Amino acid sequence: QVQLVESGGGLVQAGGSLRLSCAASGSFFSIDAMGWYRQAPGKERELVARITSGGSTNYADSVKGRFTISRNNANTVYLQMNSLKPEDTAVYYCNAEVRATRATRFPDYWGKGTLVTVSP
Image (cartoon, rainbow, N blue to C red):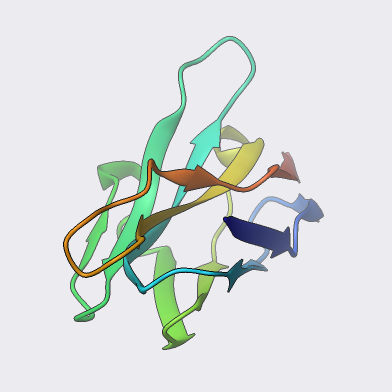
């Protein structure tokens, strides 16, 4: 089992910054990738940013140049969000692609979500 604990959400004015963090713990072989997804009211969950164990990253077009994903060790991921816009308002979910053994993957794990609200 793997637990993902998120922190860092909150209320910020447009143009401001927030930093989200997500720490993975539990019993597993390794983590292939971690990422952040978001879901706004009435919309589908979408990928915001993802980083692999090798450091490769990808971002949604809507956040490129404003958000930065990073990992400080194998099991903790951060999302630095700058120049926030009201349309960034959503619940942000941490995701982890975890290996149970060298050859097998668990189903993706998800955090409980943290609310980010950006006021105009």
